[in-house]
Every structure is written in structure tokens, then in C-alpha cells.
Image (cartoon, rainbow, N blue to C red):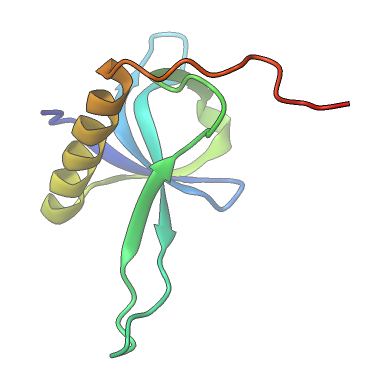
Length: 109
């Protein structure tokens, strides 16, 4: 369970939740960053949030970010910390599972 969970608002407008370490060189180390996205409203009009990987195709277990790209760093709420830890636990369980063998060339010419 990660305890130093922060919410970062980036200059791109993205809101990222991650365990955060500030490096001595002024950069930020993000561990398993997830993007906070609003989900479509339910029947009652209530909007919920989704946590999705920051990069779908890249490895994001550890990401170094220049501090100049961050507008603000906030403490995560207790509910968001619980949701973040649950999401990364699920993601880690998927990574540890043996993936099925897939063909490497999926482009047909």
C-alpha cells in the first residue's frame, strides 16, 4: 500500500495521482502514475471518476517528471488514496499474470 499519494495538476491540464518522491536534482519521481478522468454520468446525473494508466503503451512503473511541468501538488483525499492503491494492486496483478502468446506482426499487407 502506497502512503505518499499525491495529486498533481500538470500544465497540460492532466490530473495525475501517484506516489511522489522529490529528487535532489529538482525532478519528481512518480511511481505508477494514473490519470484521473471523469466518467460519464449515471442515470441520476452523478459523475464518477476513473483512474487510467498515464501511458497505455509505455512502461510507467517509475516516471521522472520535470517540476516545471507541474502547476500544483495536492494531498490526495483518503478516498482517492484507497482507490489509487486498489487500482495499482489490480494493475500489478495483471502484470504478474502470464500473458497469452500473441503474434508479433499483426499488420497484414
